[in-house]
Image 1 (cartoon, one colour):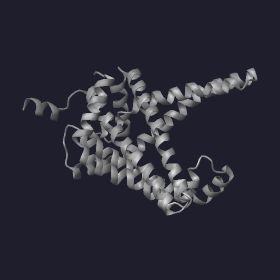
Image 2 (cartoon, rainbow, N blue to C red):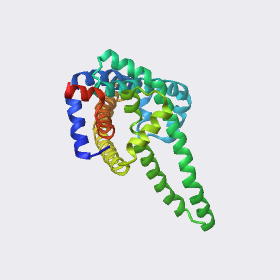
Image 3 (cartoon, rainbow, N blue to C red):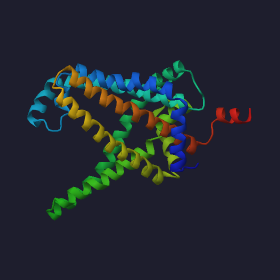
Image 4 (cartoon, rainbow, N blue to C red):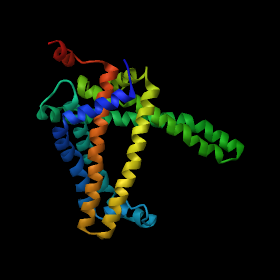
Amino acid sequence: MNFDMNSCWSRAVELIQANFQLLLIVAAVFLLLPNVAIYMLVPNMQALVDPMADPDVVAAQMEGLIGPLIGGGLFSLAFQLAGYSAMVALMGDNRPTVGQALGTGAKTVPSLFAVTLLFFVMYFLGAMVIIVPISLLAGLAGSAVFGIIGVIPVVLFVAWLAGRVCMAMPVMVLEGTLNPITAITRSFALTKPKQWPIIGFWAIIIIVMIVASLIFTGVFGVIAALAGTGLVSAMILGLASGFTGMVYGMVLCGIAVAMYGQLAGPSEAAIEDTFG
């Protein structure tokens, strides 16, 4: 098992370039279109995502849309998870056809939902272990400072947990392991030797993506605002959000596959290609 940030990034770029046309199609269908559909089909979506909107007005609108938002959100999440898995499969050493990759993506969706649920359970339990003693200290000291400080270890714990579980999807897709517990256990085993560099690498990637996303969506938010609040504005915001998700999806999947290749070593298919 080995992990090198520079090599991982270089390999991710190579994988994306080698499979770019297929990845672009999958990402457009599974990541771009759902985002556009949400903005086009959900009434007042622009107001819901507007940081300057009146909180009371947003809350009132949310009450009436909570059902459609939850239902549509779950369907969109399942659709996008299938797309992520398909892109991981396309960049793997097994070299599946597009149809096979899409089939793999569809099969992994229930297991990925289970992994997500288990992640939140672990997050909740870990956060409670951190927060409870800090809250008790804050109560005894009569100071809110402890409560504010308590947020820091929770954020660090979430970053650590996400870094340790990050190989669950590649394990499921590339190793054919659909058991969510087995996938999480395998991910923990793969990331253990280099967990801190891996967590740091993901942190850098996510921070850069957040900053770039804020700038990109901010620019298109202004353009959408100039277009008013009608269909054109919704289309602009949906395309901006979808394009960002599409690009980030390809990058994240490429990094995940490259990282898995470093941590797990060459697959049987790669060895056969090398030595015939």
